[in-house]
Each structure stands twice: as structure tokens, then as C-alpha cells.
Image (cartoon, rainbow, N blue to C red; front, top):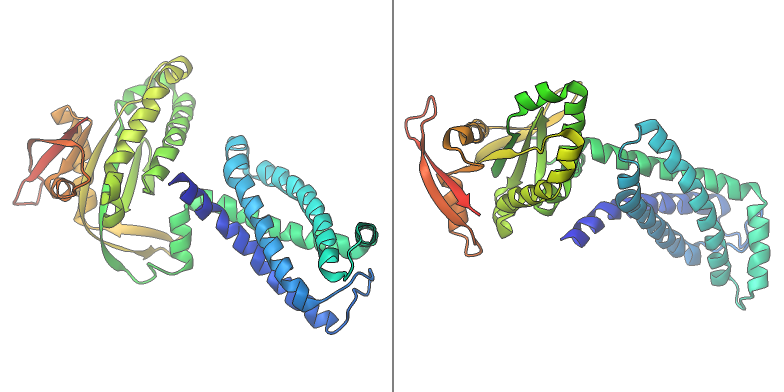
Length: 361
């Protein structure tokens, strides 16, 4: 699952680079036409033999940048301001691109010489690196890297699913779909905030949400919104039920925070605990807003899930789910959890009470 997620995150970088490389190759061909040498460097030029290595090489460079972004920069620069983060990344990539251009020059010579001699390739490289053509390409590639960096940062602000859904206009026209929602709320958040103060409480929240990230991604959840100390997760029905993803998310978050219990106690003097309410049902999903667009869900399911989360205090439970979700999970042959019915909840405006279930872990 993590390898699949990693590939899903880095492939767009490869596609960005490959797309720009292909356009560059076409522009270059439009300028050079049938010439067999670059006018400025004298290096051999062949569009038909060179376009494929160009695009493939750019795709690999993009994958490498994506790998740096996801596996390295995301962790090491997580507490760095946006402008400093972008500057440091660009400096790193400019150096990396310069090395890549030199490697590509050697590869290009290999493809275009009938009898390849390394000394000839080195001569081509010296001419290339000393020419303005090298620096113009470096600037062009740095521009692509900058776009990819911006893409990477925007992904972190709006989320993969939101950005891709917007790009492909999935919800440009409202759609009806069945989804699972989990409202997850920190216990005793008001008293914690009062004891810590605003700045320390914010630092706690920031770390609290950061520690949940892997568990959320592993369970294929979509982060719908943060509301103070509450986070709302959502799954399309099929994904949420598959491998019990919606329940796995709760378990993995619990395990992660439990493992860091001592660290939280030492750092903040308090270890955060949480409760969650689950419900499944039909929602209408669509884009809304003019100045700032959001993808939102409307439907009674959200209000019900929020009420179930609030009812955790009444029933002294860490997790409550509706009878509708219980029946969906219990019908799955893969379900390995022991469900327990603990009562009914009557919601204002509804005639029929909701069956309440929890899970005994």
C-alpha cells in the first residue's frame, strides 16, 4: 500500500517533466529542422533519435524530484516557512539539474556517434557547458523544477484528491454518492487549551495532526476539513469498506498516539486522547464558491456523524457508529472485529432512533 501511494505521489512530477521536455523538443525541432548539428555547440543533433531519450530522461528526472519531495524534503522542511522552503529546494534542484544536463550530454553523444569514444563525448560536454545553450537550458529546467515545487506545495495545502478532482472537473456538476464519514475529536480539548495556553495548544494540535498523517494515508481516507481540534475524514463507500479501511484508520491513529504517549507527556504535560463518530449515507458533492472554491458535501449524514461523535461522552465510548454502517461492515466477510450494540440515539427532527454500535478491540 505504501509503495503504491509513493508511486502515485511521484508520477505526476515525472509527467510534468516529460510534458515540458516533449514541448521543448518540438520547439527545438521547429528551430533546427533538418540540421544535423547544434549551431552554437557543433554537437550532433537528430530529432528522431533524440526525442525519446529526451522525454524518458526528463521523466526519470521528474521521478527523482518527486522522490526527493515526498521522501526527503517533506520531512526535513516540515517546520520551515514556505518562502525559505522554496528557496532551499530551488538551490538544490539547480545543482542537481546541472549534473543531470552533463549526464544527458554524455548520453546524447553516445546515441549520436557511430563509433563512440568517451574522449569525444567529454569534448562535447566541455563545449556544451561553456556555451550559453547550457545555461539557457539550465534556466528552462530550473523553471520546470520551480513549477513542480509549487505543485508539490499546493498539494500539501489543498490535498491530492481535492486538486485532482478540481483539475478533472469531477464535481463541477454536483454528484450524488454514498460515503462514510468519521468525525474525530480530541477529548477535553477546552480544559487542555486553558492549561497550555494558546501557543502551546496550537503546537500540540499541529503535532497531533502530523502524527495522524501516516494512519490516514494508509487507510486511504480523504481529509474533508479541520475544525479546531476536530478532523473530518471521508471515504467513498467501496474504499471505506475495503479491508475495513474506515476502522483501520481509527486503530492506527490510536496506536500512533499511544506509542508517543510519553513524548507528549514530556513535551506538553498531557497526552491527547480522542473519540470518533461514524455514519454512512448518501451525500451531494460539488464545487462551491466564487473567490475561493471548495468541494463540499451536503446531506444529513454529516450532522448524524457529528452527533454520534458528541454522544461518545454520554455512552463513555471512544467510538460510536450507526446501525447502517454496522450492517455494511458486518456483511463483509473480511470483518474481524467484535461489534457491540450499546443503545439508541434519537435525533431532533427524526422519527426513527439510530442504533448505536461500538467495537471491542
